[in-house]
Length: 285
Image 1: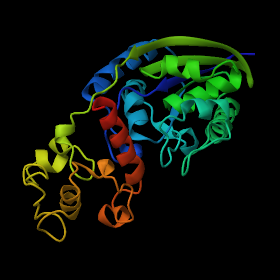
Image 2: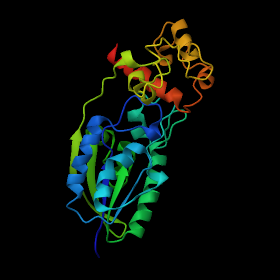
Image 3: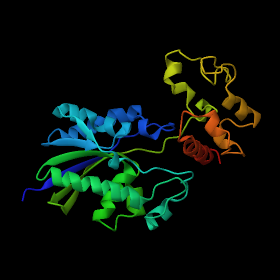
Image 4: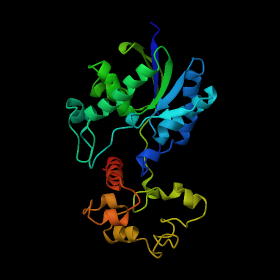
């Protein structure tokens, strides 16, 4: 029986902070590192490109897909784990108990179940072929754990900074045969320049509206941005200044009941601001 080869590509380095996890783009370094993915794949015979619909995953494998003249077929089940209200300090607990999830979050067991369901369909549909799947760090780790139960939190931490990370799994039918690591780029932690962070937790200096001179910038204009609905001073900015903090996540009242009304455009704003708070405290103990 001819083996089926599945080449997983964990995405390249993506931008932090960013409000929407689904549309989070690659950093400049991440965009450059896509060339490494292409170099590894272009000598292979590839039959299909599949993967997560998240932007960072799609953008990482897109140059390779273009090289082969193929479209990327997305599957929502290959998406990354949904983080909850406060996932900080819970990594060991998640890996010790695959049924555990923080409030509003997704358990590793759930991530593994949907990823494996999608992968088994791939193995059935592409028998004897070579498929590239764009993926994420946690999602991929749950797949590796499925085939090797010794893959736990220490194994996850070994690859957590590998962006991109390319690994091949070989199968006969649905039977797993072997794993081969094809390459990776190790990235260091990204220190955030908090002098650029606005009251709602965005990085004003990198905003597309500001760069296009469509907005004076929340920071430079001290929250007075007529382009926003309601004009005048931004209510989020005013509230943060009233409480003596730079952004909402640092407020003693956070998360307060006003946030969904003040920042209605981002349904994940609480988790985003929690991430920003934790990163701020990490670099400003």
